[in-house]
Image (cartoon, rainbow, N blue to C red; front, top):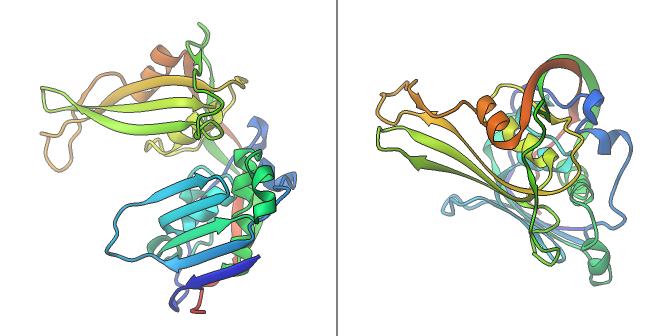
Length: 284
């Protein structure tokens, strides 16, 4: 793999800790433990410091690779190892969450057809050699007993409908999840999550990022892709700097009433990704 890049020296700073996914629910670290990797690898990779003049962030899957803009290294680690939250990494230096990078990676022309057939987990795994070659990344797994939420089918059964997204849609492999807010007349707003062609694993990942304080894991047993909309209470925009007023159902009630699913509080052995070594990239 050829590496092309323009970066500047940075100093390794302190560390932080976090958590990952339990084995009892087909844990999110399964690709690591089982050695599931892509049959092809990127041929050319460009890693550059992101220009502060460009504020937008983007992660795009292209026909022959991936294009990432304005991404902190911690997010690349999350994607490469199929994690849910950046807090699920132990030993992360401060610069890995503050410095931002633009990364473009492409497979060789002869591998484009094979690349288009890869699963999302396989595409994610292709980011690991970038971490190893460019950031001298090395890690190992440990386990901790930690609280989590398991996403399960509610007693009344799932209310989800199979997706109508065409297999020819450019987003068919990954599905699409969008987050938005709808303002209400009383000064409150409603959170809205809209999904097309999304698996339950991706829904669990999205729910993990809604400030619940725990990882959410898919234990529904549902293997199809679905289209749905989930709406739950937001915080009052007129309640001052520390608002508490809400309007509408909680996220727990919304998941149950609108999707026919349930978030169950549980505790289980959680694999943790521990960083053994990482370096800030130097100019080349």
